[in-house]
Length: 605
Image (cartoon, rainbow, N blue to C red; front, side, top):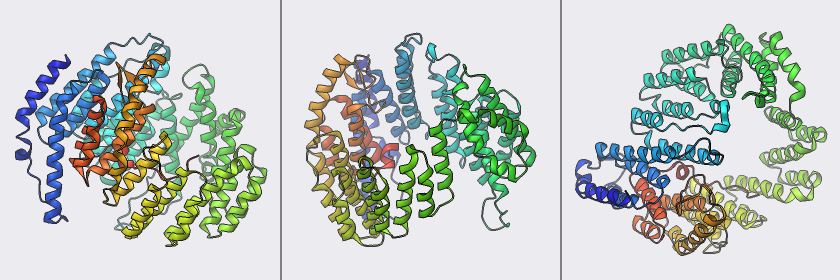
């Protein structure tokens, strides 16, 4: 089968390769100079060419996991050039996925782990397809619905991801096709409301009040039906909707013509319905301790308790809810209650002294949170000495190092934002872990870049690079190295690729060893199938390859040829295909969800 796919794909793309530039001449892009536009067109040409070269290699992949993912991504990239052929690749991806789950036995005790892996792969494929055409995305979902593991029983209803994925699609359609978004939302409500439906409702209100009104009516009917009592998603949809309604009663109505969207207004009758639903959901969850709602009982009680002050304030409290919460108060986990109390105090924007006073009577498991919050408040007020003193006087030695690092990280950000970069730099270099020093310097580089000081931003990034061992000695060092490389890319510097050049030989050795050892020691490891990394689940080296992929996507915009050269030196075909498709995506103007989010420059615990 693989050889046939290679031959077909190669023949297909021999004809396609001459059509891409002719079918899609790059439009004039506002804001770009002629030179920049020419560079953009050349980058897109290289991305399209790499896509052509990569597609035949997908047929060489041994496992359907990798073929399904790769065909879905290739189809999404091809769409704007040739929709007909793109649809054929998406169909191929769908068939690969159907073949994978068609071979599974839901009664197999080992299927549970594979089920979650397949769910993640399906979600990733859907996210590649969904921006293209709503119907194609919905057809894919309907054709690839996974059989739940037999041991799940009725609990599967609470984790079925289809409604959530369809709602993700609806959220994308709010501006372009609000009627279709409403239809998807109504179908999701029929299956059971979820917090995502409330998000959709709010978005529809901004541009299509009639559609929002129709969706609101469906929601209220669903909550009045009495069929949703132990549904976890439905409970939090009602809870969120009631929160919005209570908040709107305290929010002044915006004057017409101000351009402000009116807060979502719920009538007292509608909020009374939601209150009644919460009370019945708590009671049902208590009675259904052996069923899917049993584990939600204390969570329902705790969430509803947070609404009591506002419900009483506006005369919406009922005896039924008071009884339900009162009877369940003892079920609230003490640790959950302690955390809730801390969050409630934080919401009031307390003073430093108020936080310290509250810490004295707080349970031991949350006490350090109060002191950390108090020290952060002192930092915000510019009193750095007091911030450190709070931790030194009140926190145990074993927790103090990380907390002081976190505090100093906040201080160096404050100093950088105020332009005190040298003082902030010295503070970053004094952090306890190398990764934290790197992250601190990169955060300062980002701030310098925001202030348009490119020279300083590059110098700070160089400081971070000089702290690193190349090639890295462990996965933490790899993450830091790639963060530095991405920062160089954001500064339009090619130095980041110098850091990635030594990675392929090291990663080739690690992948080879991992495939040998893990296949022997963990024959059901979801990260490895048929002697290949699957990149599903973010396990082990798959996570490292994903990070490298993100970095190359960022770097290829400045130097596509060298970024491709790095990718070319990875020996496993599944890694090369993954990296080449990622480079093609970046060159053609897209980006993965992971690459868009960027690295988090924070404290490593």
